[in-house]
Amino acid sequence: MDQEHMQRSDFAFDLPKELIAQHPLDRRDSSRLLCLDRETGEVRHRHFSDLPELLRPGDVLVMNDSRVMPSRLLGRKEGTGGAVELLLLNQKENGLWETLVKPGKRAKPGTRVVFGEGLLTGEITDTVNGGNRLVRFFFEGDSFFQVLDQIGRMPLPPYITEELEDGERYQTVYSRELGSAAAPTAGLHFTPELLETLGKKGIETGFVTLHVGLGTFRPVKVDNITDHQMHSELYTIPEETARMVTRAKQEGRRVIAVGTTSCRTLESAWKNGCLPACSGDTSIFIYPGYQFQVLDGLITNFHLPESTLIMLVSAFAGYEHTMNAYQEAVRERYRFFSFGDSSLIL
Image (cartoon, rainbow, N blue to C red; front, side, top):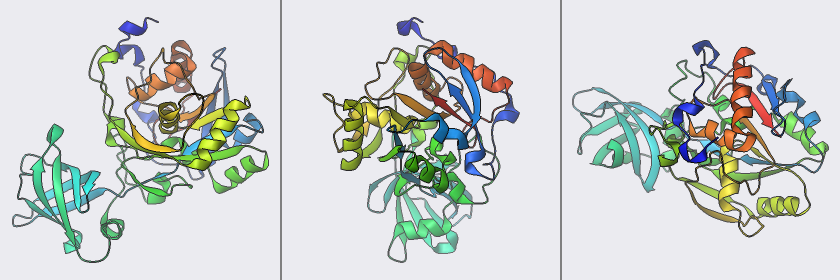
């Protein structure tokens, strides 16, 4: 494939609407697992609960422990009572957030919005890049995040149209660090019992934090994908994980990223043959032709057509192998996207 002339349309595929998962399965690890050999392109069909059989002692799994904020707020305009929906994007300073506001036309600076019957009030202070709004929040009590826990809702992706009964099902069981606008969904399939089984087999688990921004859903709009500008996201790699991954690479053991967010974190931070403990911003865009420094394996869900995520998978597994595997997943009626099934690429 000509890397300089890769078109967005090269990553399109036909996906029947009914294969877009609208809700999580009753048991997290009962999802299906498509196993793809990135050398041969061979595909096998298993279940996520089989993962301990498919990995080797000494393998290192790297997971993103970011936790999704209940960042969707429903309120009323002060004075008129008009309905306003607000989505928190990132905190600029204490009490001041960049947000996405609907409807946007009437959300002018000076507009005040009341949420949770007065528990929280927001005042729009400015319009910034892309039409987003800066909002200053006022509340009673000790913590903005305590109020958010009471009245905020999970910011489910736009392709999920059903309400989620239990917000914890859009969190991984190991989520710890609050800050994401969307879940690192590859990790949704793990259970405490499965993690325990992996540990008993000698498979190591390390954590990084990358706070997922809404840019993860931003479509590629340019025809030539090399012209696409990636969004930036904040990551942190703790000392323990840095040592674990560096040691594994030095000893020739496999490092397997759980999700594209963990992958982007590892590949962004790797320097001079080791992984440093560090924090930073990454806007790395991985597409076919990229030379991986860290990854030996990838666990990931099935992604949107023409998205930067399917481009990353194609870079790791090979373009032809990836597109063939996606066609196979459609034929076999796999469930797609955030609450969908998973794949293991080795």
